[in-house]
Image (cartoon, rainbow over all chains, first blue to last red):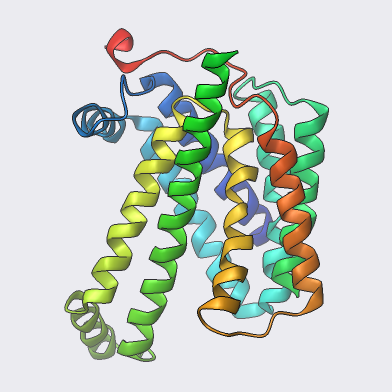
Length: 123
Length: 143
């Protein structure tokens, strides 16, 4: 039970931490000047040199391996609904780390998505 | 405000693109791996599976779409809030269920349909909020 809780923690924190790190890196680089191939390639070239991107990918790899181990121990109907909590953790990370403003409507939407994903995966 | 409307449309189009790329990528990889068969976890078995996967067109098409997903995801996060993109991207669950019924003719339980409706309602709610609540810069100005 303790190992399952630790791995669930790694799964949730790894995926949200990774995505927040990537989001931070992309915000630091700045958005592409236009949605044209040349501007997008320039943007992606800079993104690949961002440390935050590679930290994010590393954290997401930790999360992925935790998911694989959890799936080998428990049914998917337990693992995926439990991992849906990452929406809530991710929103908290966006608020306190990325300093995004989370309105009540956005919180309500996140909680609905979280519950809906749990129902879809568990059904 | 026209600029906010433009930002919302640009963000939703990009999120739609990343959801489509992720779903097609996952489905194509799944079909490719089904063609290859169950992977034998011995050194020789892994080497054989690796060779088969490198010579399977569906695997490469799947990887192509997943690279497209990652590029779209990184691009949209450069201007939109993570707390906006992440829940709106969950629309992919609804789309996968739709594909499962229409393309694969799978049976979907009432509980899953309720889940899809709840996800869609949540996505709609988040989609109506401001896509960006922090300051961002364009690449030309940042460079």
